[in-house]
Image (tube, rainbow, N blue to C red):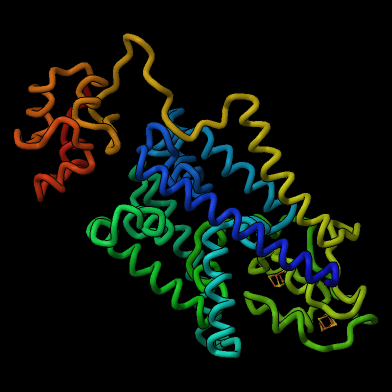
Length: 373
Ligand code: SF4
Ligand code: SF4
């Protein structure tokens, strides 16, 4: 097998691996709760961006976000500065889902569809609008207000059952279905048109010295690069790819049949696709391992020390009623009254699952209505 083909498989293999690992993490979160297993929000760099204002103004993080999430966010910003949207093209599990469905779509329909230019151009700006709105509201409300509309969050909560996901984030689920079906027809549907994080990496990537460069003298004008680009960049007619849309997925470079026609350059230095893959993985996972070794990569709340307690606002959905009462140092009976929990709900019930026993119970609104203890 040719080295370039092997690298293409390696890229798909890595994306599949990250997708499986994050899916397992999402499942474990549903089983063990956020006290032991990080939520999908804690694992997503976007949570770091959403928490940035809160961090600068109060020194704390918004709910479900921890220092580890901020570190993840910082690592991906460094990646964007060094290798543009390489997080999107080589690591992001939600990008991977779209890539796999894109492949399936090519197999099913035997062709690659391209959105009409008149629709494609304005739609590409939509992700910048999503970025501004999501950040403005997240910073204003100091919360993950977007979670019910987030397709990745909807995916991660599927182990809870379709009915639950529908009840909690119907719009997120609809966008997930649109993304999957859209990716069958149009490659990287969500990345191109809706992803706020991709929009930010694209803007920051503009500062990066990294680019894909076409050597006009070596190019045989076969057009394979343009045809294979998942975000439909016209590589064949570019001298260098500096578009904020480029995912640095390396597909064009790896599929180019002519040696030396398409190359990666970091500044003036040529780097091989394998080196790009290795460096991106080294920066991303090396930084995570370094943060872990330094003991700062926490994605779950620190366990309470003896004598410590939490406020009512800090009660989490994954806690059982009994656990929450103990953590707030409140007598169980008083806790039931404070949180307006009907008496027939067993104390072993998780706070977020009270509504399963007592329909209509809204944990979040009861919690916010309570004054700090
Ligand atoms: S230009 Fe090349 S590296 Fe950039 S997104 Fe398209 S195929 Fe991937
Ligand atoms: S795939 Fe390579 S040879 Fe073909 S048009 Fe693109 S750069 Fe030129």
